[in-house]
Amino acid sequence: MNIKINIDFPILQESIQEKVNEIRKRKQILLSDEECIFLYVYSLINSKLEGEFAEAGAFEGGSSEIIHLAAPEKILYVFESFIGLDNIGPNDSGFSKGEHKALKEKCIFNTPKIILIEGDFKETSRNFLDKRFAFVHLDLDLFDITSFSIDFFYPRLVDGGIILLHDFGAEGIKAAIALNYYKYKYKVINFGNYGIIIK
Image 1 (spheres, rainbow, N blue to C red):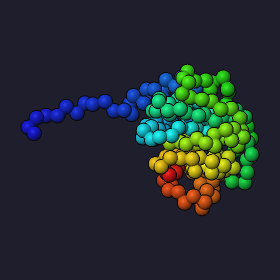
Image 2: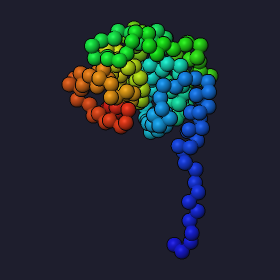
Image 3: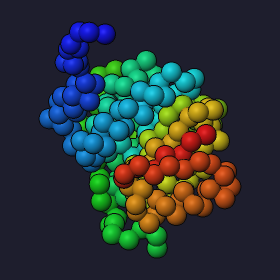
């Protein structure tokens, strides 16, 4: 082909970054820009699968909005206790009770596709036993609730569904993944500060 190709084309990453910046003006997001883009991409990849989306540990809901941007047609259940970190155990060094307590008035969404579920996930999850999920984002920081959440969501993932776990390097998160691994023998990938469990 004896022509010069114009190499100017839009990069999705740039438009995602603009949207993340807009969300940051309204809500505090406890993820880096790179992690926000990573979250968007994996939400987009799984948006064509059957099953719903879920997030546990949403803080002010900024990450929930990023997920919704990638998969606006999906129902996204957002689980948040609004009491901060609780039940800190021996695997959870560096955290304090009540840390990352979110303001409920910040966790407001202007779409019926994002459904906020307030309360202790160990209690509220009982209302979702019959659901199937294509994508789950966990940002819970601590061993006990992360372990419970993996055990709840993994059997309910559709084939090809994933659980994305933030703070993969934290001792409690790795311990939670390891504990459930011996039960489910799932595939685990580490990418930066994220762990990915694949069904």
